[in-house]
Image 1 (cartoon, rainbow, N blue to C red):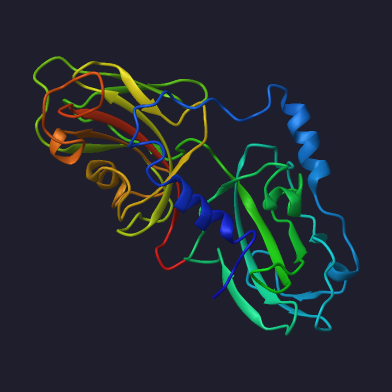
Image 2: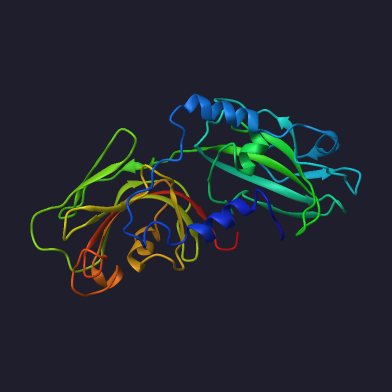
Length: 318
């Protein structure tokens, strides 16, 4: 299958963000959200592409939330991005900065050929953060969950024109939503702020020398498997110093592949867990940044504690 534009959001995010948060000791990034949410939401509503002759020429068959088929006279002339609402959905409109789940069927504007479906059934794509600047925001604006939209993309140097039937499946929480689990004796304790930001209290005693993890909240979503791309919030504390050395909270959720790009212990923390879960993991140097003399320059030799909220998963084959 060949997808671009909207479908590329997940793949591009995966490529760009691998290693971006967990392999650095940089200070947490500041939130990209506007200081005035109403301004961001107004911009999102205004960002949606106008309906036009190209998008209105597409007839869609099928139920919103399931793969679709279309008919239109081809080749379809697409002068600019156009967006036509087929189903308005219901509930509260999406707000700028929220995470959204979506799916789409894609078609060639030149031949009418179906290029494929992504995001449906057991093959989800990672949730994406919506804004007025990205393609999803320009397709659905401030639509309500359940909305179905026809989006027509003009040809580019890399590809011909394309027609997408885009389904806005819903808003995804930006913190774990699973059922709380009993505390595990000997593990650090975790308290959550109102927005979900964790804080960790380390127990007294010797620093652990083996990898350990425990599920703090058990979600009801898909199981994370080897090779999957995963969207998470995380909070990292050094057991040696007691200091927070990195976290995604206050910025954007972090995307990585369990096949590499993060230290082994971080991937092991989420493998076998379900979407919606929150886990805590203890990483000795052997599955973190290696043995060696502890210093202020990096995390070599340190035992790390991560609290990880699993927000979404994308199978390797998607």
